[in-house]
Length: 90
Image 1 (spheres, rainbow, N blue to C red):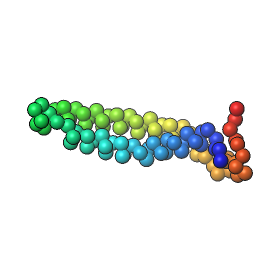
Image 2: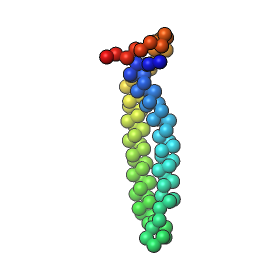
Image 3: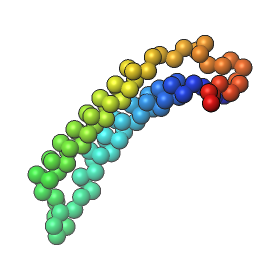
Image 4: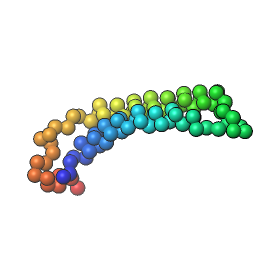
């Protein structure tokens, strides 16, 4: 069944919003795998800069996703074709 393009994009934005915390958690634990010079722990200053940069990127991404979710009006169930016909517009 095909849905309207705006409905499809709205649903993908909802999916992206749901996956953003998982991406953030993975990026925040990544410094635990780093090795510093000579196999020692990495410099704390480098790790803190990385954590701040990841935090800033996550804030910007969440703001962009939220803006896109607000821009798309809520899809109603009666907008979708109940017969399952192709509703794509050429």
